[in-house]
Image 1 (cartoon, rainbow, N blue to C red):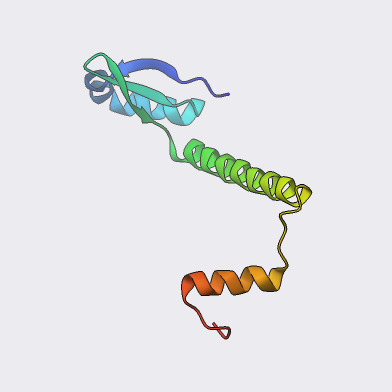
Image 2: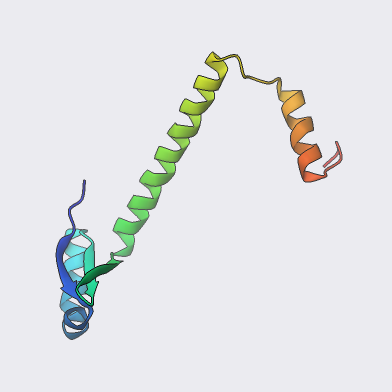
Length: 97
């Protein structure tokens, strides 16, 4: 798990923007920003954010596979032709589309 940097106020982030951004890039750690004494925002460099999105996408794919395996184990599988026909009907598509 990536630990965020110590929280900073928005005003502090504004005063030291260049240094804060450089630190974000160097460490890859997100910065929590406080507004009114409450953690409100997260600032992160783009490379770290993309890595986060990639990991999230992977985790969601694994979860979908796990759910599919569990459904099949319960006998809830459906022949592909039936599944496509049902999907076409839900989307209002003809067989050619």
